[in-house]
Length: 203
Image (cartoon, rainbow, N blue to C red; front, side, top):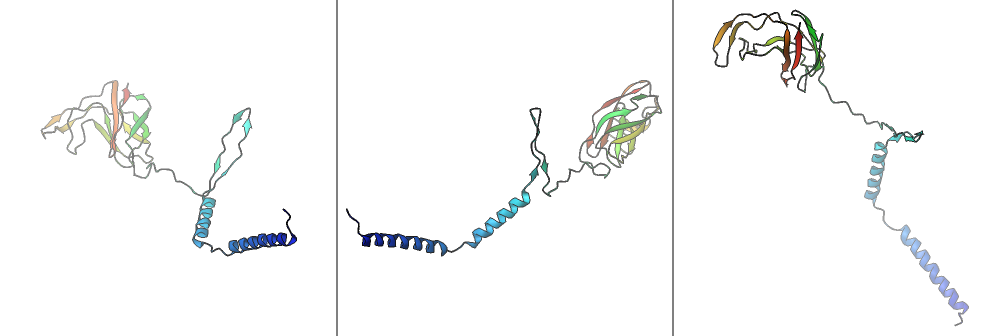
């Protein structure tokens, strides 16, 4: 079938009209400003949260993990309460310095979560009685800890004595008994609980 010049011109004109109409349609569509705002907000947030990492290096076949660099957001470490008077954990004894000693020896307890003002140090076992102030008969010191990590006490020369009372408020006078060489349990109690029990050797 032979296509005349007139037909070719008509087809070309129709194609040109379609192209021009399509371009006009695309350039006259309404813009959603809310979408642009969301896009800008998302772009800003991504930029704020981005981090820079160091390049991964390879040393003898061992891959070194990239180290993230802070993006400006800093996280404070959880408070320990040490030295502030605010203790959040149960006290814990780790060691004694010295590890053993005679009566009258000054001993430093090392550990964690000691209260700044009030820690009850027990030495030896309790007979189940208490003093007039309510402390147990084997409490030998009520001391504070400036750093939350150390406490100091003196190895007693004698056991509990004086007027001691039981749970039924029955009180008796107890004579002092000399502390003899041996192994004695030691613990620390404060408002957050009672520590583990560690043994101290009296020589």
